Length: 88
Image (cartoon, rainbow, N blue to C red; front, side, top):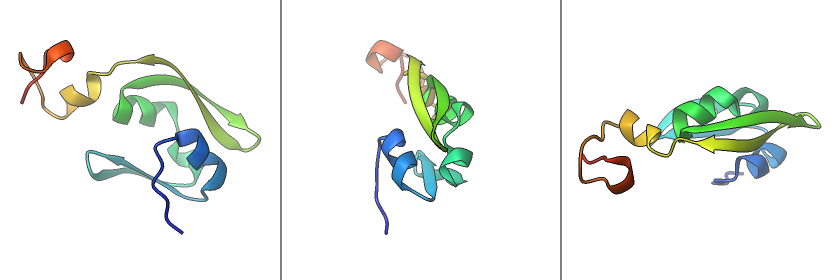
């Protein structure tokens, strides 16, 4: 079965395998405990988070966001992008 979820905690609870995408490309592929990591969250979503375990599955508790980081990583820069000061 295939499901598309944006809730990483829900995906971690029910999925045996998670494929994380970053701008349409595979950023990580594997078991939830291999994929849902603080490093992946920072790199792909620009979020700092505490990733714990509930019972044997990852649980994400975000505590900081860098909403412009993914845009900058995608090559956006300068004036027309509102709050982030980004445009392409």
